[in-house]
Image (cartoon, rainbow, N blue to C red):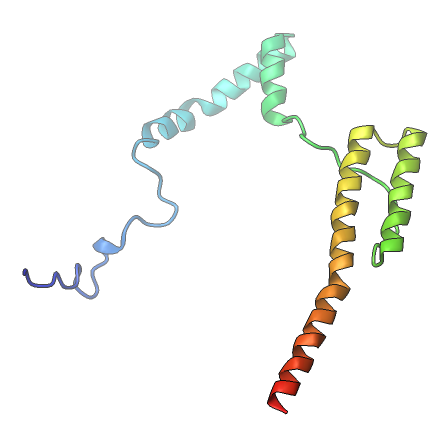
Length: 144
């Protein structure tokens, strides 16, 4: 059997600590150099072309500056949801907002899923409390 390997670096060795934080990969380095050198002039040219009405430049410019939002925020004044009755009231509020046209059906579906999860959490809370009390009582009986 061979001897154990031992410590790979001597104490105080600064070279063997790996790559410094924030340093870039060597492969990306030439790309970064080109971007640093030509990024600003290319952006100016793209902006100029967009201002002249070039639709491809406008589209690219807007896609990079203002990317499409995946989900818009839903604004709805919701009541607190501490009990199952509160969750039911909130669900009714979502349904009414959808009926009025203040919310799309897909937004209402998302909100109802959130309320369903909240209802499940509210429902589990007392059960977990009761289980904990039961465990404490049994532990006290076993020790007593």
